[in-house]
Image (cartoon, rainbow, N blue to C red; front, side):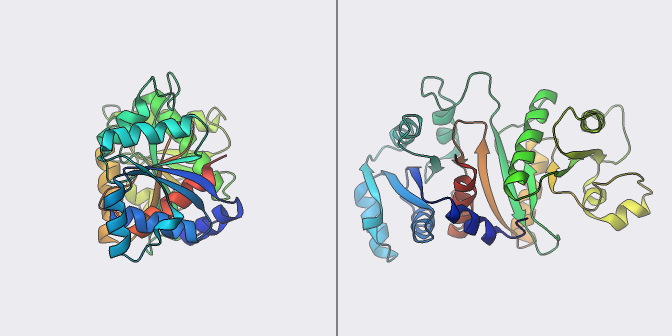
Length: 301
């Protein structure tokens, strides 16, 4: 079982280099991360971006530009289109967002004519967080894509959480459905849907996993809190591998608190596309982007 993000890099390396298409890859954090991923033996990178800008950044940051295949395109939207087309054509195994804004990147992925996103599919964002305050890696969803998932979308998100946990070597992941309270509150959607999902899990309708809900965040993460609140019969409380948040706001706040206030590090990708897609913030560190590349390479076929 993988317990640290560094181990994801090690496991991805064992699969051999994956072909990485980077959309608008022309900022220092992205180039440094991709360069380090190349040196780690993870990728063969192709950058779609302004060649002059890329050359200057490589000079300024002591990056060997010869490791990159560069497709010169100064327009960010066209870079996304070209990178997506390369993936769909089978010329790349993983897609990555560079300096382009998230909305433009996502529009490129969701473009029906591009062929990367299957009809009637569900696109969702999955993150892995490593914090000193928690005893193992924590897989969470969704901090960036679905603002308010409906019940069917939550079922898909649970599948993505479970699949990501499987990549970490967890055969039967424990998933907590987060809500404001561990009590079932009829007027709170996250509460009632958490209870329904837990019952579906009990009956094997969601796959090989253990799921419980509703659980408040403190009950989910801390066994002593669960005991103090007299939450009985939960094999998830105090030891979840995954957290399913009820909406983007709550997941995003937790995500940023974990990374900024708790000093956590993370990896992230978009699932539901034909290939894994790296989606990190333009402000994320090169280390976060390296871990995200490694995660996507580990997930790639």
